[in-house]
Length: 246
Image (cartoon, rainbow, N blue to C red; front, top):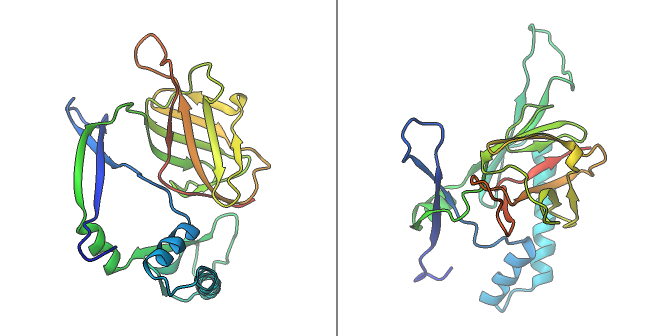
């Protein structure tokens, strides 16, 4: 970003149903675009014509591979926009307890750098008022692991909470989909796999054969709080990337 450019974000408001006040709202940043590593490299090359896209990509890949290797071996790594280290999930019983993969797991902890925190703090915020559709996913809980907004287990259950998320309508696009971030392959959740389908909660079963990878979850629905369904479907893609390990 050039020195004279000012960063800015748009915030839309949604009903906050957890409080007694009817006019309480919470805000969500509107995602204006989704950028890949190649997109970032293209931007860098456009600003610095002396940079080579292939060299940049190769350098990033090499550094990522080394960083992943070191983190997996217990190192604390400062890389890019964050500090990375490993955490331990699960309770150990007794001083001589052993590692049990059915109970214990390792997780990656990420803390943003001061540069990133300061860049975000400097952004101007434009609050646009209530979101047009009100459709929003608040949380995604993997029932098998208990993890929230981070993981999906093939063959396991998932609890979604939100507002106006009920799957409803006869449009062909209506339903729940999982998009693989790397391959862009879309997996649709079968209607028979949806166990609870309410305006504020959905429970469904992840396909048992879903390949490992990182996924984005999208809900498309024609649900309306009025008697008549919406003529056109509306979609909401959850902010967090969900990891699947087969």
